[in-house]
Image (cartoon, rainbow, N blue to C red):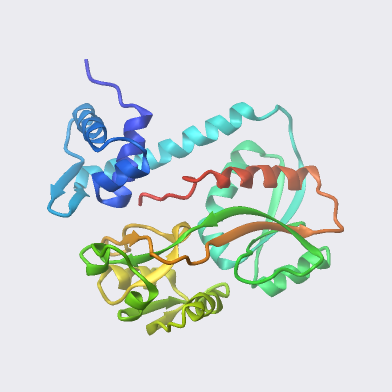
Length: 308
């Protein structure tokens, strides 16, 4: 009789796929390396094909492992949604709620949000407006939007707007897998300044970078400044430079299928915070509360730990 696959094995597999190292993944999962190794071996036995290939620097996914990964990511999301659905009180919520988002938010949070709302609140109409931050704040103050999801750590909000932080996403160093900084005992901004730096130019990120680099009296050697996160991701994976970006936008693979690794810096850099924002003078409606409660699930530490 074939062995059953457990959720714990899936979590271990996702963590190893993300980090590329069983030792690192075991630390993140608070389990011994030997226990994780046994669990992964049992998972491969249950699946019937090798999912991981070992090498001197850690592990990589086999072709079968890549295919398996795509499906188990969906399974984990389904389990999370099942928990939320079980806690949900019955009822049919209808009406319209108008939500503003910047480009970064819509790229990484909108698909999950809209998919969940469609399944759970079929009678609720959600109108999403993508604008620049200043335009969204103006529309909130003018009553043209009910709610917005914004990066609230980069720029101060208008005094008449209220915010609830939903995600605090750490910023880490991204490099290609074999980069020497990955094996360094500690990495400072001075170390990063010696490398070609790829600077993402979205949602006041350039100003944020200038602030925390300036705090340490260091200036990055910017090789390229781009509004394309995929361009930055691909160039890092191809060894053309390094960058410092948040876990929210991290993916361990580029569009070309090249791997990217991240690591902590030894100095404190600000998190990238996503907040739900609305006008102080506007009462929170039932429709708005549904969205706020849904976004609160993002506060879980592993909510945005992508493995692909």
